[in-house]
Length: 253
Image (cartoon, rainbow, N blue to C red; front, side, top):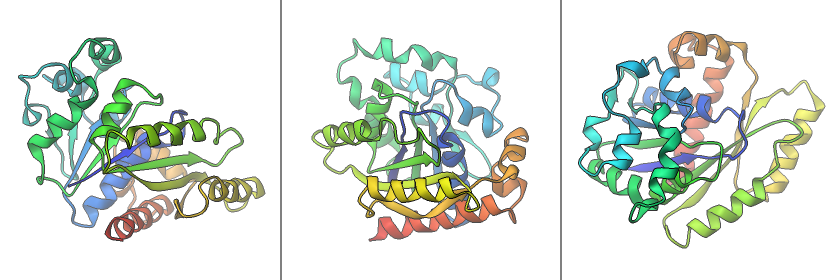
């Protein structure tokens, strides 16, 4: 079971959108996928069409109540399964401070379903919080979305240092790579930022696939659908499918 955390402490980099659509692309490839919404904003939950008010239990209950089992929190959807988040997750960091082995809560819970999925994708909050540390401790891989704009690289080195620190506690954790979002090949600055991304990660950790700007993404979000449900023939759908295939190749390597 490949557990991948999508992480970037900067918000607005298409982290949640990418978690959703990479999950959908992997599903299109015949993989069994679980999405975990670990962001207190809960946008991944809403974006998949789940009504938060209807939820009995969510990721907050899973992390804070030892009696809650993973199966009680999973919502089954046509493309993939989801462990949703609600606003309750906003206080999870404070609650977890006093918990024993607080950084292993998610790992311990995901071990209950080991082998039931090909991929588990974790949408992390845009901060290096206890929730993010939980995700990194539970993961095999880290995937870093980077928006092609001027301030996109702020904090990247700090994130790299955090990942290096976590690897002392989780020796199976590897950086799968960084990938460009909001890429526009018509704009010189976008090309320059991609070159900067390659230089930042010394080339070896950067995906060749770039997620291009596509208005179809916004329309799919309005409909609370993945890009594959909304418009499978769109440029964004092609990009996310190419990215999913590249992820699979990198993991096999």
